[in-house]
Image (cartoon, rainbow over the protein chains, first blue to last red):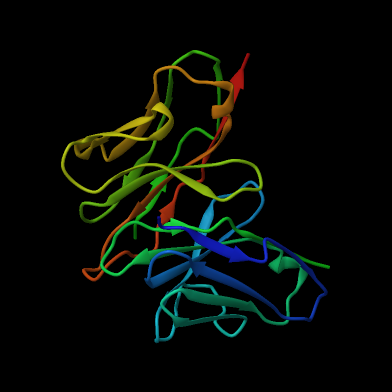
Length: 115
Length: 116
């Protein structure tokens, strides 16, 4: 159990367009989901925490108007990169935790390339 | 603010030799500690975790880690490495705000190279 999926796994978009990434918990309900970003050969950096039914909490330095997060149900969170630019190219990984749980279950990641 | 230090960026080990990857953390309270492994272009796989209790934790693939509060360390060990262990290893720290998990703080990672 505790499987998290992400869609798409890879996406290429043109500069100025928006792209949506989905994160789903397949076999459990996730009250909290997290979005991380990983640049090539670097570590993961927490971008934001989303709780079902409420606004996401963004880490310092992350533009909330650029990275829109919606957590409308207990199994789905979405990250929309608006007006994407080449510097937004990165590996985006989501994770989810059960209600009251401390462990996070990670998705396989989404590779975003902005041309 | 919490921080995680993995002092070794690269480590090269001969196949069959023992391995220890270092992790030190800075945290205000008792943290929750994790080790993850990542193959190129892939997501994270949890190797082991420490929440409380026995400070020696057993994980998958023959890995273990020991939580040492006095040294603020959570080093990962394996008695005999296999070529398939070559990957990037991340130590991560989290805490709970009381209602569940908070976001994790990751170390910069250690790239493990296995020599034949």
